[in-house]
Length: 154
Image (cartoon, rainbow, N blue to C red; front, side, top):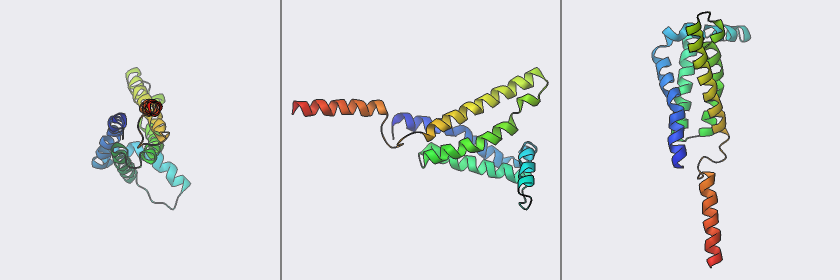
């Protein structure tokens, strides 16, 4: 694993691990924010019994698990994809800036909404990493040039 990946992956994953642990610890307090998603799930699948707090716990467990996998480089593309997927409803439900009349609250929620959108973009870029165990492309190109020079020298 390259130095860049060694540093960047844990940085990207840190918010998910921290937020996931926080969700697991404080699920009842965070449950009201998950109510719209739980209501939607109840409409789509009425036979599935899901509480708002358990939905928060499930999301938190996914964030801790996938965040840890991304940070440690275990199935990083899959982990990034899962995190991006779970961050979409988390962002829409957790930061609905369009519902706030107060200018300061709207601005705060807009910042958090856009921060999450940026994180989704970073995660999607991480899913495109062609081979997480290869060196950075610039380093590979430099190595190829040196190999060619060495072959010319004989």
